[in-house]
Amino acid sequence: MKKETIYGYVDHTALKPTTTWEEIEKLCREALKYKTASVCIPSCYVKRAKESFGDALTVCTVVGFPLGYCSMEAKVQETRQALADGADEIDMVINITDVKNGSYQQVEREIAALKELTGDKILKVIIETCYLTREEKIAMCHAVTEAGADFIKTSTGFGTGGASMEDVILMREHIGPGVRIKAAGGIRTREDMEAYIEAGCARLGTSAAVDILEG
Image 1 (cartoon, rainbow, N blue to C red):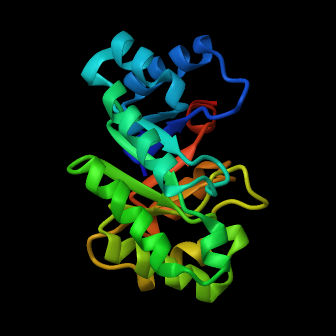
Image 2 (tube, rainbow, N blue to C red):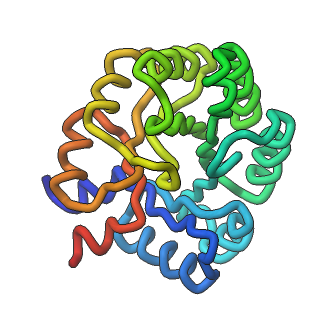
């Protein structure tokens, strides 16, 4: 697989709490140079990134990140502000406590509320697979599908584990036809990237894409 093809799947990511504007600028320049699918950056940098790089750059940001257990109302407001600042895509974290309490319909309602806000823009739903049982993962596939989200995403990269091929295959079996898969967390080699793409992932979240493909 050509590296130019792989870049087209990548959400070029910088989400560490110590991330500086200088690092965000570098990330954005790399995204434009290598034609990645997007940059995924903290919401505090969305407006500045859009003002600096314009519509040539697809900007993704995160909501309820990384733990997911803020209120639905907080996530709604966070999403509304991110969109006002120019975000093109939103990666939200589900409320994992709702999953553990068996409140799957509440998770679905929360996803649907954010999808109503994002409209034609892409909404990705991070289910943080490392904390879920197989049955809970399947339930989240159904919730994401029924709520009308565009993507289901494996991980924040801040949990106890990242993407796994087993989880991607499980998602592929249980999501609806309108939902795509994003693998994120722990993607460290070109072989990993190619394997996830071949397994059906439409996006890959990684901060190491340039190092992997150019290094």
